[in-house]
Image: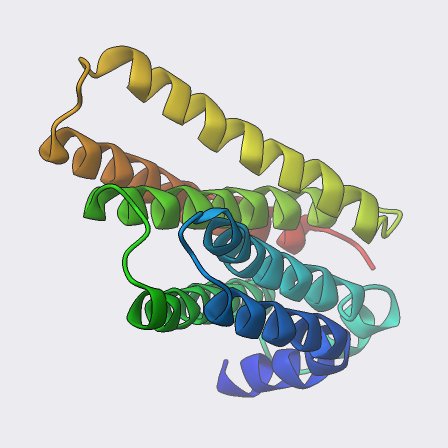
Length: 218
């Protein structure tokens, strides 16, 4: 497993170089500019938490198509282990994107002050972005495994739109249930519902993707 994960990251580094450069520049600008209007922070947060792992997922699957699948299956490893290495690598990408967003936001707040109305606003932003990333990754691996034509970019767009739609739908539903004005406990509960639902779906996606991959012929 460790070898597979290490190999995954070696293969996607080249795919991430440009994105990391853009993200670094965007992070510096976000931290330096006045954050009285937090739109720049919010934009970077979604760019980092959603964009970084989404780019990672596309790099993973681009490099795991075609002859690579035939080659890796000649080794004495189970197909489920191959799938597990992808999901673990992707989870690491989500964590790295989240940490990057947290660091830039912390630096910006340290320099310019807290731009949000309440602390729960930050929690809701992180939970929605992480939820989108988890749902997007889940659908992406399912779609790409079930697709026999290696349409990586197309599957990436579909999964991203699906992830955004699910989280926005959950937020709309929770807002309709919660009485106004919402208490901090209600807001924290909503954030946890989104996060736990996305994490549970990510785990279910792993088992379903593994089942599809075991039956797939290369």
